[in-house]
Length: 247
Image (tube, rainbow, N blue to C red; front, side, top):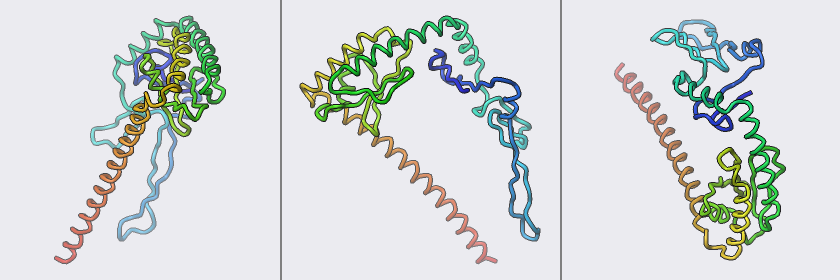
């Protein structure tokens, strides 16, 4: 089981863990081997067989020029401060604290879910069992991103999504005490967008603009990477042709 301790563990980022029920199960995740067949050099017959070890949890480098290097995570070594901070958070909150927080979070989810379902113009997506609530527009005259913009003015930071267009909120220890305010604000936001559909149109533009920016960056990086590889191999081919002509 994997757990992100920076989320509902209320610790810092970079401390996620993978948990095993027993040491026996953990041993199965340590590493496995496979053979890689490489084409032999000119003059050699057949193929050379190379055994490689792959780890699912640990990282091993046995042929590094600096010697043998191994870490207990794929991400490499972790600062001791992160581990200490996580341990402190776990000990500070404790089992009773986490249980109490979970109960309060789910009570808030129940109240906020009911508020969304009773607000005309939007509808809850799916049948959420945990602490994330997503909702979309149920009225062609209401843009869900405009509703999200109206909510941001009221102090809420909703996550805008697409396919389909929707917004969602993650209920946590930070906002579980504001369930009543959420219900009031979402009702007012939908009514405001219905009365003035163009008031928060910048929310839609910003979402599209940011998405386009991400796409442009990705395409730019892809083109740059492909170009670099292309010119790298073209340089090698060019050099080989020159050497061949000299011979």
